[in-house]
Length: 204
Image (cartoon, rainbow, N blue to C red; front, side):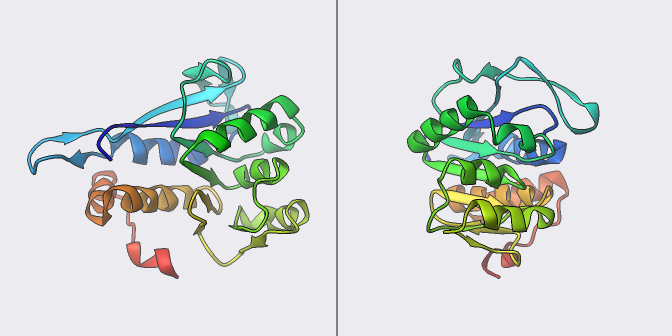
């Protein structure tokens, strides 16, 4: 990666806080060494929502950086989950937006029940997927042509990387950093966060 990649995180009312804040922290603080001494930000992280202000899970007030129509092009799209997914999977304009943005993105990440948005958009056929353990059966019903894994914290399909519930999004994000920038960069990010990340779990 020679230049910063645009990484957009979708927000909506009643989104699970750690679903988006965990990955936001990982990608925002990651630094890539350029010459052994200096470093640069490899990810330009921003939030996107239908409305300027959303209320995340348990009432956290968040102001989005962009509306859906005004957001910059995204190299990486991240879809979090939460109780608000119940309303969003029937939000046709949002599902159409997801279809459009996933087609143009290099990578698409989901955390928790964010996988249900991809299922509703018909984007998981022939892939492996996972989600929060309480939504596994619902994902299986919504995506009958998908191998739904209930034994993995995250799965990597190449373009699509999906994490299980909540804190698994941090592991997935660190894995993605390692995939794009190398294991040592991911480990340094985890050390900065004082997060006990074990790369060995990636292949289990």
